[in-house]
Length: 310
Image 1 (tube, helix red, strand yellow):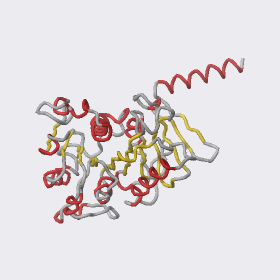
Image 2 (cartoon, one colour):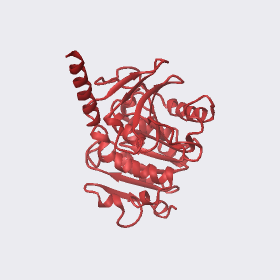
Image 3 (cartoon, helix red, strand yellow):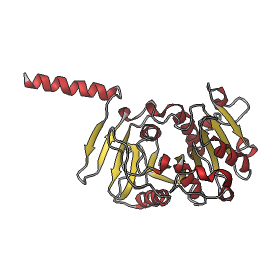
Image 4 (cartoon, helix red, strand yellow):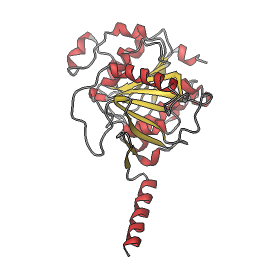
């Protein structure tokens, strides 16, 4: 009788996992925690959220099965900074997990979120994005690493939301970066710098001239408190391919919605185009009737360099 009850409970848990209604936590032999959320995402490569003992104060999102990836088919990289300078991606883990499930390794600033808990602790630092890039380079070159020759270090996007976007722009000159993604963020003008939260990086608008890659702004429309800053950034950028997209949901975006909501769709299209050379994904951004302009609620502005980008 106990065996039947156990099997029934196990099947129930498995069913809830399949529906993405619960997550499962694991602990590796080295003490590193991991968790499967939303059944690993909707992509072809079911993802896992995990700690890595070789990289303190970061959270990794990566396909559970790495056998499909090698030197000829490596994982492009998304380096992520969190809103409010939180040192944990607890607000963005559904969004980041979804991206990883489409064949990416995501290295997010901060400690792996515990289920149902908000992060309480010191703010993150801009240097953690640099540490993330250092780590993927080292892991890809280390014969003892499970990521050996499985990471596409030539295709790195650095990105972040709100404060994480400011951290990203602070680090924009790093030559290892292939593209930038600024979410619900933008540099402050001198006139509104007093609106910033203490501890945020505050690079001047002249920092935009150090950008050497393509860049996308993903904003929450006019009700997004970062809308003015982000759109002002975009209108100042004329030396690299750039676009500004808006979806009217405010500053919080759609990160907490199932699989990251609408923001994950646009972010993935950008990453697939910029890091994987996906020509179908390019159609989301290029052309007078581009895919984003056809999605309900979305608007896009883009410069000529982006329109002509091959």
